[in-house]
Length: 157
Image (cartoon, rainbow, N blue to C red; front, side, top):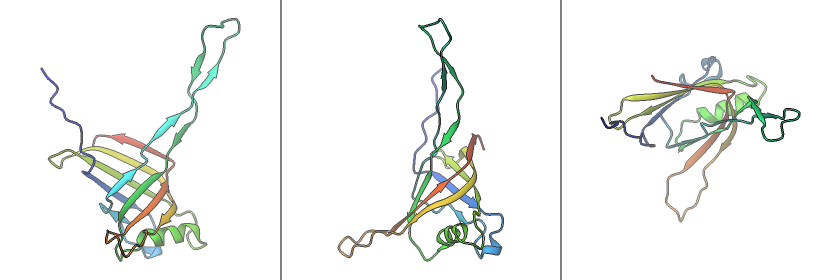
C-alpha cells in the first residue's frame, strides 16, 4: 500500500504570540495572531561531547551535549499595528524588562487542517527592523522581528 501522505506547503501556517501581562503593557492579547508572511528559525541542534576510551584508538564515544536553539525570524507587511514594536520597547526598557511571551505555530495541510504544532517558550524580542523605504520600488513595506526562545516542543494538534 503506497504512502498517501504529502509534504506540507510552506505558505500554510498560523502564528500566535501571547504575553501574560498584555493589558498592563497596553498590548493586544494575543500579541499577534496569523500576521506573518515569512517565518524562519525553528531549529535545534546539539553538539555531542566526545570521549575517548583509554587504549581504544579506533572508536570514540559520543555523549549527549547541550541543546542550542536558533532565533526565530518573523516578517510581515507593516501596518499601523505597532504591538511588536511596543513589546520590544517594554522588554528592553525599565517598565517591564524581560517581558517574555509564549508562542504557537501551527502548520496546516493543503485542506487547511492543523497538522503540526510548535510550542515556543520563553520568547524574548531581540531585534526589530523597519522596512527599507524606496520611492522607486513601489513594493510592500516589510518589517522584521527576531525572537530568542528558550526551547520549543513539537507535536500533533
